[in-house]
Length: 172
Image 1 (cartoon, rainbow, N blue to C red):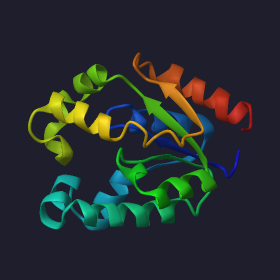
Image 2 (image 1 turned 90 degrees about the horizontal axis):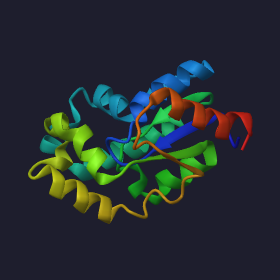
Image 3 (image 1 turned 180 degrees about the vertical axis):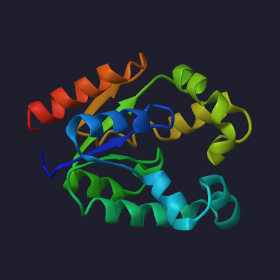
């Protein structure tokens, strides 16, 4: 492993936070959710940040948080779905951890996100249309990851085992 961090990336609804919590527990590492850190640091929810300060402000804070988090070791880090849009974030992730993309089909993501629209400012309006549109725009954004894990069949324990086997046991 490059550095003792596992960085989970992927579109929203692919399971980064859920998988990350269980993987960190299995490894005995700290779990870090960058979106939660941003909310804590800014003392407001992500929708509030988008509404009051805008997406570009949010991305700036996100970049600072990622830089800060990746200066530590032995963490499983769940990143926001759009964190990979900045080259500096992708570079930092690769140089300070093993990057694992969690992937799922649009139809599965739409089902998972149906009850969460209010918490996700980029999904306001027609959920299905927004998901397909964003997935199309971001289709190459996650290609930098060291590994891709399919989360269409969402059995958390199985996904955790796959990541553990690929990243930890093979020391890649």
